[in-house]
Length: 348
Image 1: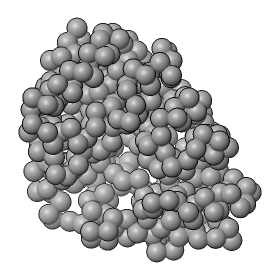
Image 2: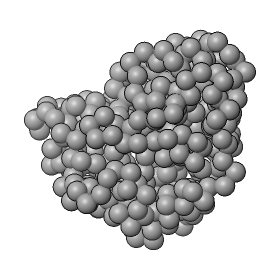
Image 3: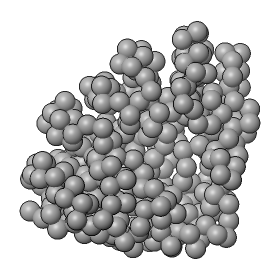
Image 4: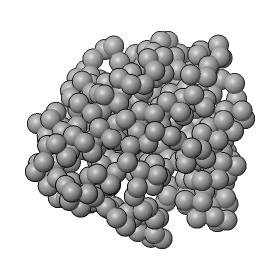
């Protein structure tokens, strides 16, 4: 891990270790996004995939979001899915439709098509972006890398895009345990190497996004997901904080703790302190304001932030974030105001 005394003593990294901080750190999922004019100015020039694959532009939007908002960490501008391209899947970002995989894994017999990556040369643009961002970030601002969790990426690969009920995913998951194990292990090994490359290039922490695992009940999560997420976390360097983020089902939180991580990211469907008590006093927690709260007028937003911050008090280990990514329709001024509120209210 690329580190310096300034980074190790940064607000964000101190919070990941549950150490005292001068004020509550905050960063925001999708903090480089369409709600920001600085992002739109760049995005007008290129397609989304081109933006992801241009280190100069990816670095520009990563850095500008951190600078404009004044947040305590930058997160690499990238996407969960391009890693699936060198693994053998045909990925397109269709206008108005989101990501589409044209050759999904629709049957057990297709699982062999997904290739484990032994080399990450085809993803050099990600690591080049990390290096460029790290060179230009302030010395006390950590850079976060990230990847999709094995289950979320498996679901994308099988469904070919978004899904309401994950029928195709569950059909393979339930029908052939050997094929599911092969699919998940291929993803785990590939993702472990991918995240290690991000860390080696200059990231101080990483987040694993399990955005779709909330569709599962506890028994299914324990059997079909937990062992693989835990295997991924266990393969990462012990001195690099890992944020394990899951949405959609608070009943899975005890199992999320078992799956591993230093910090646990949660959405707004459960009270933060209730979740923290479930997870235990020895871990840091990230979250968990409903992103739609940012569309409300300032007095309501302030009240909700006060409620959340007040419930935590001066407990160490809280990293303020949304319960998911900021929406494109969100007024940028509201996001900037949120950052100032958190810093003001969290001052020790």
